Length: 293
Image (cartoon, rainbow, N blue to C red; front, side, top):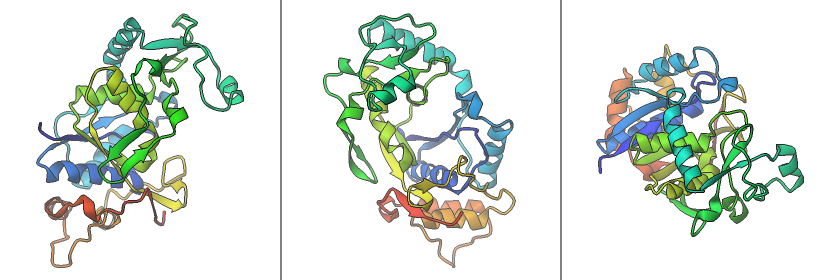
């Protein structure tokens, strides 16, 4: 099967160093295997989105020489596919409506306990949850190509997670799985902050009767332990006008130091070298690496 990877940012602000690391890692993994590298804009949460961010992200990727294959996909245009899957899950009793509030779930210890699983509530004005009990075995372990075997919390693995919110917005776990299936993604390279969601996504693949992709979770760039560079933490936007120093820094973060005798005058020559020398074994097998913001 031909390799297809992707980078899927949300338009909640400009790209920062942490998001560049994810973009670069996914790009080099795809290109080193003669595969395709796709870009998808995950714009399904309007309250968190910033006007113009999608265009700025694409301009920034081009400035760093990270040129994608095929057309850019926008999640906001994928609703018909999401609704088709939701209808199929409902028809096979693999999902149900839930009226429980966050306050109630918090009072019950923070994990949803399946309160509404057998109530047959109306889908209108309620959240929709996946029915994990329909799986023969819940996902408590998966293998990551970089981090190794990842053991998940068994209680969280049994939780019926939300796939459509009460306000009508599609949940990340639903949208990302359907989009990856539709785009034929064979491997997902992303930040280690998404390790906890991977079990839920593999669960959804199984309920849909689909083969899950392989996974590589890269170390997060953090300013202090547990505090990743992010738009919410006011991480600085990377420089679109002078990209080479930041590109070299991102490669070094990923364990690939460009030799002095290699032409470093353009992003293209740097990326060509990095593609030829890309090796997962060079990347630190840890979930966080300290950097300066």
